[in-house]
Length: 57
Picture 1 (spheres, rainbow, N blue to C red):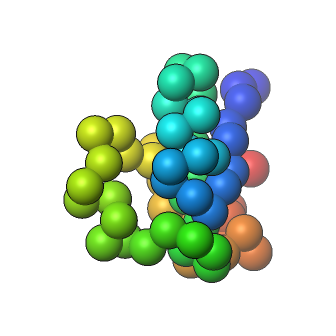
Picture 2: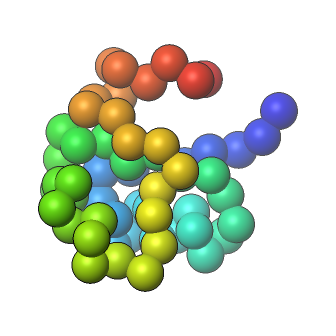
């Protein structure tokens, strides 16, 4: 079992997970969009439309 961070903001939630060496889930129901990912030097491990759609946990 591992730890994953779930968040809707690339610049805070997903960045924190990346810096901590964790797998990350970006949910698109909040702050960040798919277009925002292009400008980032890191990528979320998984992307889901909303928390309700997460099926890996």
